[in-house]
Length: 500
Image (tube, rainbow, N blue to C red; front, side, top):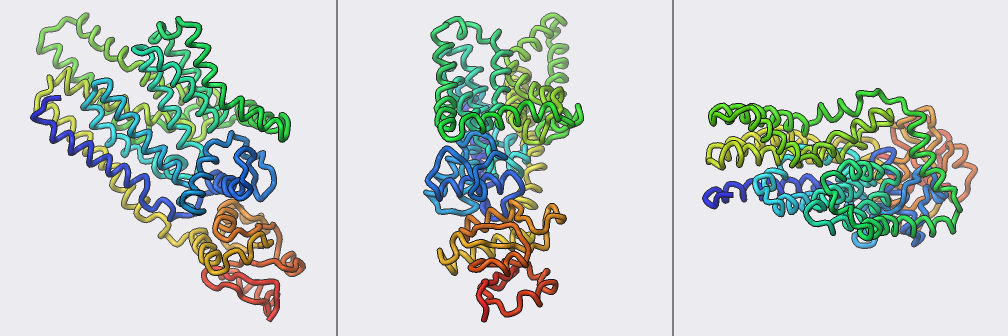
């Protein structure tokens, strides 16, 4: 990087790192935990925290086989609860930190690879992949933020393995930790590793290195499996492998093109496509100006593809895999978006260095395109989603606020008391007597209640219980509840089983 233009690039990287940090952490605990996975996992971690249990996850204080994934992200949530207190912010904090480490790790990798322009542009492209910040990933009480962190470390270790074979050890360890986040989903890391063997063949020539790497990948998962086996034998493993792999694939009904279209229509891919077209166009123009023959130009393109082989397969193999298994869900291909950000940044570097000869014009033009396109996607996301998180008056936001205030008012007085709920807004209105996860999470996290499915009649026949009822439902039940002590009055009423 030419020294006279360093100020421009320092400003770009600093500005977008700060913006990414803002997108990761601002209003992190404001909006309610989303059904089903986020609210479910935060509840898992809370109950494990209360029971000082790091291995066996429970939901509503029964062993949980619905969430059959290994517990590493839940354990990080437990640590967060211990550090910051129990809250929605604490539940989401490990994922946000994982996002920050992912950003830092990729930037450091690009600097080490002497791709300084790419390193400066990556934070902008990372932020432009707004779905990573808005749903089921780096701002969610989920498994996926940490999983994508370890996935990224594993992939970059693969790349570095060709130069420094000892990076195979980091690849193996990251593979094992990714398994501890999402279980069989981590098989994609293994598949991509196999596809990359031709590029890192020397690293695989040492049998000792391969064995140690495999041992590093297996040590944590095997330790967890052994500990869990002592508790319930193979029951969880059957749910984990048969449910997550065989069950999901055998019952796969997603459209074949769904994961491919999800990537092809993403913000990240749109910017990538622009730079792919620019790369091809400028390569042809440069070759023509220099009078380069087709063979030489083709060799240049071939070298570009070879240099970026890992990022190409990392971007497109996962969507193709889920297309063929017909088991795609939106967040399954989030790691491909990170790969596309890296690939785009490296294409931008190629245009500046190889095609633009690091001229001021090429630097400014590429920087302007990346910054403009990134901000085009980032600004509406920050303005309409991150800045407004939790301010939309959603019934579950109101419920969460009420549970927080109820917990602050009564402390442990109603801890573990049976709580019945009459909610006006439900994902499945036909199950009106059932606590949905979005309600369970704040009731447990903030008020330490024991959510119990049932109706007003169940509440009336259950001594020492409480009833939480949306004010919009009050007219339907006022005659039945009249005379019961009102413990709390806001968007929701909380009634005691005691009478005036």
